[in-house]
Image (cartoon, rainbow, N blue to C red; front, side, top):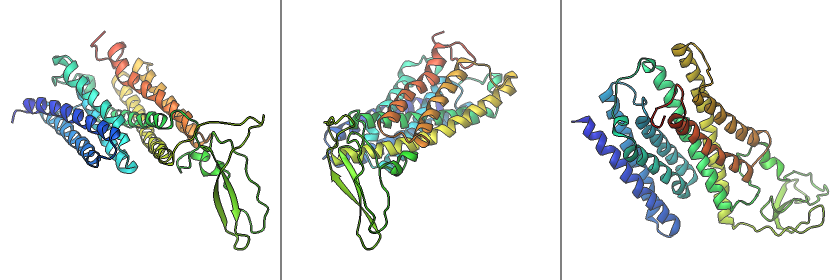
Length: 353
């Protein structure tokens, strides 16, 4: 079989499948009562993932090296990573909204690689001497997987902001660091102990305040959810709109999965940067040269380090970390694609400059 023909067929097939999958997810979001859209969307993502994996495998066999030597190959590897992480996120969240935000991005990346890149950038060529190293697979593959995870996590953070309409709500998920259950006013009391109602701003609790009570005999504390209106320190009444239980539950799920996926992508990014530094020392005699790619990789690392620090140690949750992750989505794209196409450095592809 002609591997070049197979690759051309597979890249067009992956684009077509992702385009149809995107439409299926959007149709399911517009008409939630259609039961088949969720299964069709998941199947489409799985088929696209398999097509891209086969394409990369054929490329590997044809060229004789791991297919991450040019922009075309790295774009398809990134799309493969996004579709794989999408399947994991969708399985854990059970929400079709994951595909609503990830499918368009995966389809756009495939379209850019297939329809926009010059033909000479899509052809597999012999490796330059600097790339003839085992570090090519170690460094580049880990970096691309970290980009995929951080992008999916950031997209879910953007979806969270859309679902909550940008409101500052308090979540009850278990993945919000020290700001989870500990800061919600939940305290156990002994039997017969006087219990006072905590004053909690409704803007943080989505219009609800949580009150502790006990059964005055068994020593077991029971949590009662009381709908309340609380004034602030200046005796001003908050009229902030609340979310429906379904929308609040979806927001908690998106926030939880986004946090966990970014938590997966950050250590991968750390390992990739360290591997790149070791490889740079072997190839160029310096661990760090402040190349534009290295600089933006450090900026990306700092942004998501700040995100995780804010959640784990500062107790941030909801809107603020979601805004930070949304900014990280743009920064990842600058680090991955903007620097390579527009910058001048050791990592540039030289398309525009």
